[in-house]
Amino acid sequence: MSRAEVVIDLDALRHNVSLLVERAGGADAMAVVKADGYGHGAVRVAKAALEAGVSWLGSCSLDEALTLREAGITAPILSWLDGPDCDMSAAVDERIDIGVSSVEQLRPLSGARVHLKVDTGLSRNGCPLESWPDLVRAAAASDNEVYAVWSHLACADDPGHPSIDEQAKRFGEAYDIALAAGLEPKRHLANSAATLNRPDLHFDMVRLGIAMYGLNPLAQEEDLRPVMSFRSEVALVKRIRAGESVSYGQTWTATRDTTLALVTAGYADGVPRLLSNRMDVLLAGARRPIRGRVCMDQIIVDCGDAAVAEGDEVVLFGSAARGEPTATEWAETIGTIDYEIVTGMYRPRVRRRYLG
Ligand SMILES: *Cc1c(COP(=O)(O)O)cnc(C)c1O
Image 1: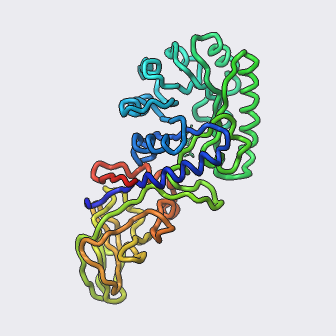
Image 2: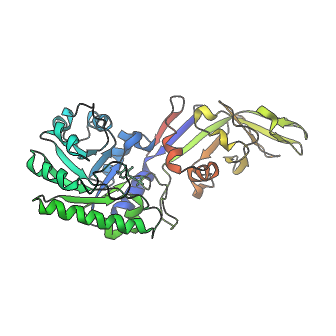
C-alpha cells in the first residue's frame, strides 16, 4: 500500500443508497456529489449511486456537473451555485439543470431547464420570499422550463427544531405562488436528515448527501455503513524507556517502558494536528493511542507490549462496526462535523483506492 490511502467502499455506498431510496418512498432520489463527492470521488460515487437506484445527481457548480458528463454519465444533473461570471451556455448544450435564486440569474439561462430556489430560512442562496413573486413571473414569461421549486433546510439534523415546520410552511406558500403564476413545478426540500425522519417533507424528490456516504446526521440508529476509511502503515517500530518523551514539544512522556509504532500519515495527509494526544488508531487488532503531537508526515502510536511489526496496517478512521475510530469521532474530538473530515481527505499525496 502507499504511505497513506483513502479506501472507498462502493458496496457500502450502494447499500446506503438502497436503504435511503427505500426510505424516500415514492419520491425520486438525487445523489449529491458536490466537492468531488464529499471527498469520495464524484464520478465513481455517481455511477455507483445510479446503479443503486438514484435517478438524479446534484453538484455545486457547472464545472462539477460537466466532469460527470465527460465521464459519460447521462442522468439528469442539477447544479446550483456558480458566480455571475460563469459561462452558462453548457447548461443547455449538456442538459444540466440550473438552480436559480434571482431574476438576474435567470437571464443568461435562455432555453435551460431550471429549478427555482426559494430561501425559506437559511438566508444563504435561494430567493427571498419578498422577491419570489417577481422571480416566478419572470420564469413563467421566459423560454425556460421550470422543472421544480426547491429549498434547503437549516436544522433538519435537529428533529423537532421549530425552524423545520416554519421552513416547510414558507415552502408551501412559495409553491402556491408558483402555481398561481401558471407553473406546474415539482418540489424538493429534504436532505439526508429529512429523508430519514421527515417523510412528510419528501415531496417529489429527496437530495441525499452525508447519509449516502454512510455518516448518520441523526442520533437515531440507522443501518448506514461508512464508505470512506483512512489507512496507513507502520514504517518503524521501537522500544522506549519510561521517562522518554515523544514528538515535537515533548507533550507526552512514557510512564513505563513501551513500544512505539511510527505511522506514515500526518497533517499533510489529513490527520488534524488537533488530534495530538487525543485519538486512537486501530493497529494489530486493538485501538491504540496517538502519543505526542501529530507531525506533517507522521504520527506515533503507543502499542504497550503488543507485538507490532513494520508494514502492519493502521486504520485511522473507518467503521465503528469493525472496531475502528470513525470520522464522526474525529469531528467530535476537534469540534467540527464529519462532513468536513471526509471532504478534507482529498489530498494529492493521499492515494484513493476503490473497493466493490
Ligand atoms: C449538500 C446539499 C445537500 C445534501 O445535504 P446532506 O446534509 O449531506 O444530506 C442537499 N441539498 C443541497 C442544496 C445541498 O447543498
